[in-house]
Length: 176
Image (cartoon, rainbow, N blue to C red; front, side):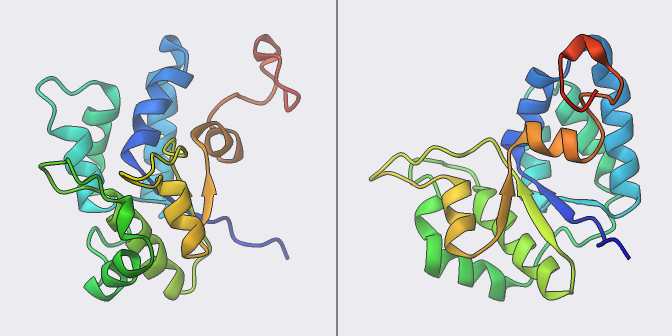
């Protein structure tokens, strides 16, 4: 019997990167399909990601989508604070010390740990993969410290069947 697909924990950087990766004519359909994954419980996001994506002055497609998903998410928006403490102890330098608002990164990892403890396989989806020592580490490094699997937005979109679409020879993708 095939393994259950993972719960994808989305970071704000991934939402922003989706807009760059997806051709403009495909964005609406792709975000509708992402919404189906939310409704099926395959995507989770902490409250802080929703806040980061939606509090800009003029939210674009990812921000508007995130706002619409808030009530459709099947997994908690707020992981137990125990998990946040674990993240901060092992990878507290994931928080940008110059940021004046709540940084979503530790909550993304905490939600992954919380969801994994509930028996699900989890993968954090992020474009934040570059460490900037001594100021901060990337979300990918924080996940590695806590043994949480990571995928970049391109890998996620392909694995989730969002983009490139199978059979789309225009992309030059070997999956086509």
